[in-house]
Each structure stands twice: as structure tokens, then as C-alpha cells.
Length: 269
Image 1 (cartoon, rainbow, N blue to C red):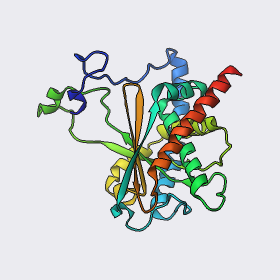
Image 2 (cartoon, rainbow, N blue to C red; image 1 turned 30 degrees about the vertical axis):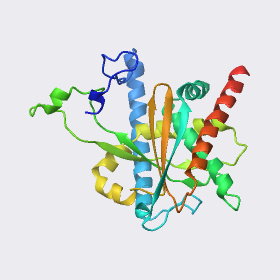
Image 3 (cartoon, rainbow, N blue to C red; image 1 turned 30 degrees about the horizontal axis):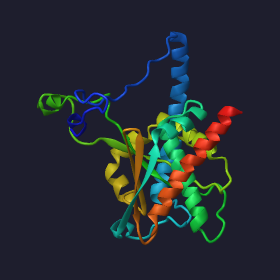
């Protein structure tokens, strides 16, 4: 409904457009072989990630760090900060990593930025590869693109109202300052590609009430909106855990700039 009230910057008379899924391979044989191999991966990744999801919900916990919350953290006072990125900078990084997406770059920036923040805030050196479990929401609606508001209003329409989203566990791994920043994007792409093939998101949707009670608001929540060539990452923190969210925002912004310079260097070499 919100998008139906919006208009494009380049043509105010037109509604915003949302891209669809790319075309499949033109070779039937190749498509059939790819489908069989894809099915095997879907089954395997689904079993692995649902098992991980269940264990994280029931018993496994992350090691305590400078960004870890505590009992009742969802009720603690909050602070808000914003990190602003140029989409052109994100596209430079995207082109430096084969078949990467803007989402891969964003998650790489978050991983790199959190690692830099932990370097600043941790009194003792953290183990390389330390895991911090993140949660991402995934849209599960089958309809591609922007829906006609009048079809939604029609009581006989099969198009439903409201949100329909699942949850993915997207762990952030700590790597010390000095690591190649592009490696954060490469690791993010590898993990997200596997997550996309699994059925973890539909599984979590079916147990949505449990998910929201276990993985609800924590010490750190982030949301990105892109508009007119810029991407704004809104950072909401529990101020008793992260009293300086502007420093964290600067870590994210500096992480993208580091990636941009590394991408330029990789392109030249």
C-alpha cells in the first residue's frame, strides 16, 4: 500500500518498479541437470540450517561480546544512529566480487563494521572467526513486483493483505583489523547463496510466534532504505550495551570505503 502511493524520481507519473526473477537457462538438458543438483542442495542445506536454527533456539548461545544483550534487553532504553552510503560505492564493491549483489555488499559491510567496532571496544583480543548470530527477515510473498491496490481491495482477489515473511539466521564472523575487506563480501555471498537454496525461511514462518519470542528485539537492530543514489542504514541499539551508536555507524561507513579502495586496487591489478 505504501509503495502504491510512491512515484519514481526520474518519472513522477509512474509508480515504482520492482524487478522480477531472471530467465532460466535456454538448454533443457542443462536445466534438467541443474534442477537435480539444485534439489540435492536444497534438501541438504534445508536439513543443516533447520537443525542449526532449532539448536540456536533451544540451547546454543553466542560468546559474550561488547554488543551482546542481557535479560529483558527488549525493554531497555534505545538510541538511534544512521550510517549513509553512496550506492555508487556499493556498486564498485559489487563489481569486484563475481556475481555479488548489493545485499551481499551490505552484509559484508555489516560484518566488517562490527569487527572494527569490536576491535575498538573489546579490552581483550577476540578469537578469529568469533560468531555473532544475526537474524534477517525474508519476504515470502509469491507475487513478483508491485501489486494493484484495487486487486487487494477486491474481496474475491486471491492476493492477501499483511506481511508474510520468514527469518534467516545470518551469522556475523569477527575478523581482526587488517583482514582484506573484500573477503567479508565474498564470505557473505557464499553464505547467503546457500541460505537462498534452503527452506529455512518458510520453516521459520510456520513457527513465527516462536521465532519472534526467541529472536525478537535485541541489543542491535538495523534496517536499510535506499533512495536517490544513497543508502541509509538505521541503527537502533540498547544504549546500556552500545552507548555510542554513532561510532558504530562510522565503522560501517569506513568499512565500505575500505572495500571501495580494495575493489579499485583489485580491478587495477
